[in-house]
Length: 207
Ligand code: GAR
Image (cartoon, rainbow, N blue to C red; front, top):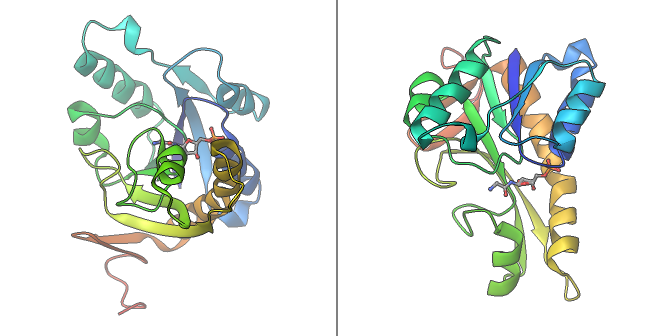
């Protein structure tokens, strides 16, 4: 399965996908990595792995919609079957969703529908929840509102701060992302309203 990964920062989730993709049996080829800003470690990781990269910056475009269209065009060159937003800290809009709605996944460091947005671990800590986690979902027009593919829970410890909690979330988040993207590549995915299951729609294995 041809996959384009979008990043904004460190790219540890990207690295987990790169490492898993080294095994042909995993079923994924990362055909390009894109970012919305220059100088990200995510792009450095991709270059080190010999993966084509591109950067599409909002500030280089007159409107958000033009940026969104440019990002969509930069992705389309690589003819992906799946897009993975792995720490991509921008919302995608109409042009992107017209082209790639239904085949774009995002990973979020909280248990949806709790704590959407850019500060999932901080918001969970501030609220005082005892369990948080990570959610992989199919991107829609909302903020972290799409149909849920996978979730994994992480206990909040008494002495957690935002950094320690987010780092523990990221450990299980990476494993969830690798497991789920691999299953989609090998088995397919079926989305019925908000219900998502692995397996192609013509397969009745999970009925
Ligand atoms: C991940 O925890 C991801 O869920 C989060 O950014 C981190 C990226 O880490 N994304 C969001 O908060 C999006 N709302 P990484 O760059 O090391 O993969």
